[in-house]
Structures are given as structure tokens and as C-alpha cells.
Image (cartoon, rainbow, N blue to C red; front, top):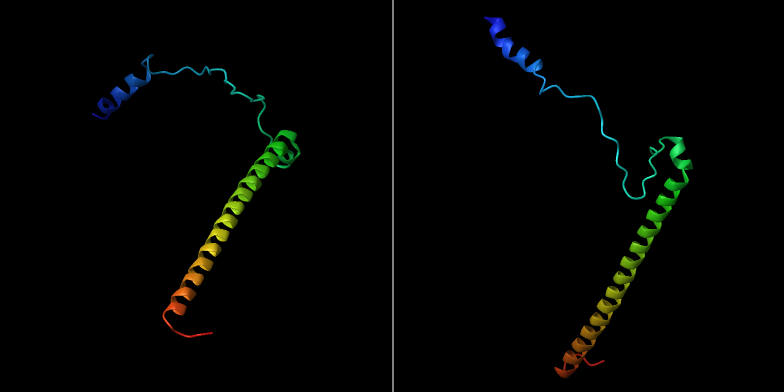
Length: 102
């Protein structure tokens, strides 16, 4: 009875359409790939391409952060200007109501 259960699995294993070949396709390189694997460990730090890439990324990040800082400074100046305008408006309102006289 047990052999009847395992028989379909054995027939699948011997089916030539299910068996896969062990051949591999050639690797396709993208634009800019050198074809060599990236070094790992202490050799990764000595690779000029890795250092150049890291420097490029750091420069991009610094530039992006600098742009953000400039935008924040501009917004801060606008906010200060708006606050000063509100202070002047409040002073004019208080002076017109006959409140405290300085």
C-alpha cells in the first residue's frame, strides 16, 4: 500500500521534461560594469573605483544638505519679517485704542 503512494513521485522524478540541465547562461554586464567582482574586506577600501564612488556620494549628500540649509535660512528670514510686521501691527492697534502710552 505504501509503495502505491510513492509511485507517482518516482515517475515524476524520471520524467525527462522535468529534469533541468546544469548549464548556465553567460552573465550580461550593464553599462559601466567592469566585469570583476567587488572586493570585500580590507581590499574594498583600497579599490580606487570604490573610493571615487564613496567620495561622489558624499559630495552629493553635502550639496543636497547645503541646499536644504539655504532653504531653511530663507524661510527663517521670512518668518522673522512676518513676526516683525505683526509686532508693528499690534503696537499700532494698542496705540489707537488709547491703551498704555509709552
